[in-house]
Amino acid sequence: MAYYSLTGNTEKMAEGVAEGVKRVSGAIPHVRKVDEVSQQDLETADAIALGCPTYYANIPGRMKVVIDDWSWKMKVDFTDKVGGAFATGGGQVGGKEHAVVSLVMFMLSNRMIVAGPLYQNDKTGSVWGEVGAAAMTGPLDPGVSEAELDSARRLGERVARLALKLTPPHPSQHAGS
Image (cartoon, rainbow, N blue to C red; front, side, top):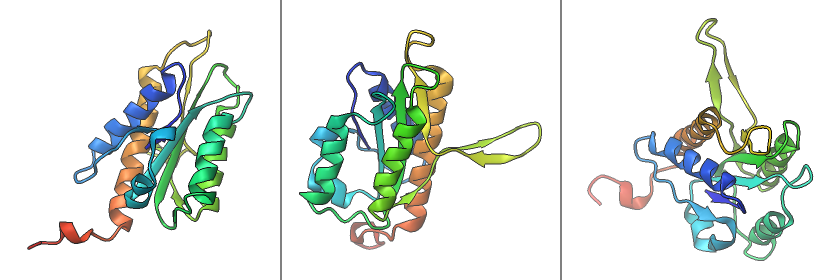
């Protein structure tokens, strides 16, 4: 998972996503700041969750430059890797969903398979998914709440489950190796 964070809120959400990944037997999270992710990290990852704060209802310029470089300069092949996205932002409608969708569009444009967290209504049994996870971190609701961390954990768990289902075993995972 790769994230961009200035105040620590997005980093806290990234840690929540990692906790969700750890809920899945056989899945191992690797959490990195977006500008510390190597080409090898990207090429060997079965799944990639991306997260960032929302700046003026969009992803920060630094995040955009780095992920563009993954495709244009590093020429990473993201085909069929599983992806998920999360964002933080100060306001109730400050653009967090747009930032998540921008990250998802990056993934889809790079041929990834994208998933969001799943939820279930205990009273009716209905199940639904969301496009990603988000946290409101401004003056009206400072920090990252337990409910927002729950969405991050659900995202991590779903992305990890799908990655394990869709990724053939690595040679080192074969019995007798």
